[in-house]
Length: 224
Image (cartoon, rainbow, N blue to C red; front, side, top):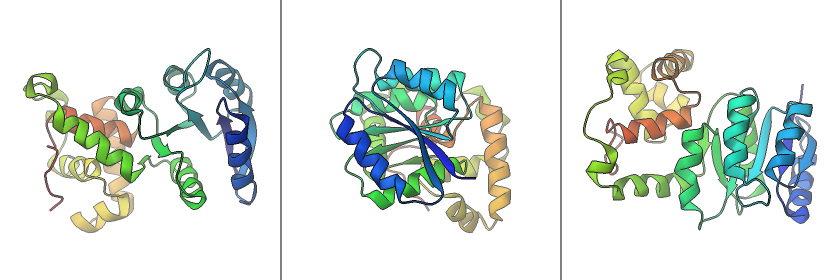
């Protein structure tokens, strides 16, 4: 079965370009387009795509509000937000809403295709450039804004689950985490599922944000 995708952007030329890029992939099928957030909600309810590619700045209902509703009402449709470098204020809010990833609009076609396949397979992603900006944003937060108390949910994690969460927050893939901790990839996926359940989260991207907000991982810490 192909990966089904909905395209949401208020610029018709952007949607056409995305459709052209994805149309050449045998395992990807574009099932519909929308020009704003309100149309996106209707489109996703009707077509139930595997992945929604959605812009942030749109009329009627912006991509942030639409993403929040899509994650809440259609959890099986994963959301990737298309962003630009001047939209930092949207990034952490959308991550908390549970989107599966961010991708820069200037990303090359092959990166877009890889992102869709990654998210459709159940993994989350952040464009590397966006990841650095998110971490920098947390680094700029005063300690009072981040909070000093350790969330009680963290105490429900086992030592191994805590190790996995730390590495996830530092940007490692499942395969890299498995190699670092000398585990099988399937075992890492099991740990991630339990982490999300215990913390009441829905995506690995949310888990990464949680790790920084809770103080489990500090910006600037090394991966080792």
